[in-house]
Image (cartoon, rainbow, N blue to C red; front, side, top):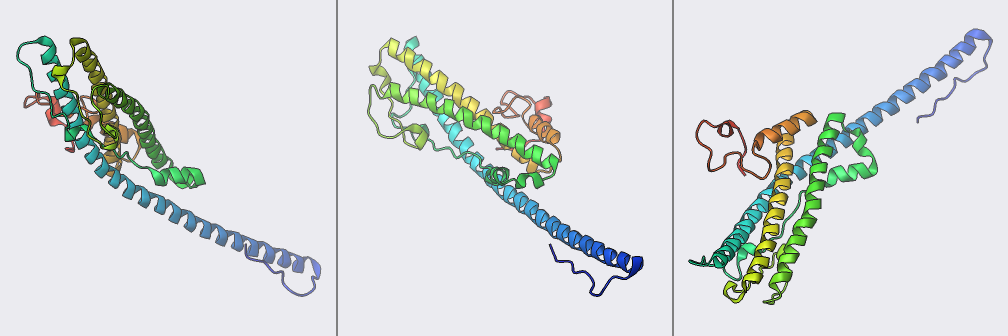
Length: 271
């Protein structure tokens, strides 16, 4: 606050008194106005900084998501091939070959979306400088990301159960969730009861993989909607749902869609 100095000289009569008081009042008002102007400019710069940081982080998140989708696609295909081979062994007759006992698709290291600028702004209180609509959009993406991270725990638990089963029969270092390739036992060496247990565990792994994939797809679509110019939380959600009419984690154009189906008319961004 700038200092306001009273005019020098003695005060004689009401007129001088009013001039004296008026000078002080005008000085205080000017000082307050200047302080508020400086504060408003500072807050504007803080908002711009948060928005610029979030734009950069969200664009980087989209790149991470593409990498994660490719890893999850490969991992799910590997697990499904292994389960199909087990099913053929249990049914008898022609047996499908199991995937290589050390398959590169079995290991993955997922990198989850980052919302660091928004989280830091919440901690230091500057998040309150954002417009309400933008704040709601960031909060919506953060909520979807929280569900994703929660499901990551279940996904990791399913992988740990699978590895615990496999390490009864073969020994290998590391873990599949940290990009280490697992080593599967030879299916011919397992009993029907062991194959059945193996199949049940793989079923849980597939279910948790699909859930994680869907959660990641939701976050990805919400980020794309925001960066594409969604103005409100409702627009963000509506745009995300339109992009995935069959549900998150399921491509809008499934292989069995025929020309002319509603799904074919949806404008989506290919992963």
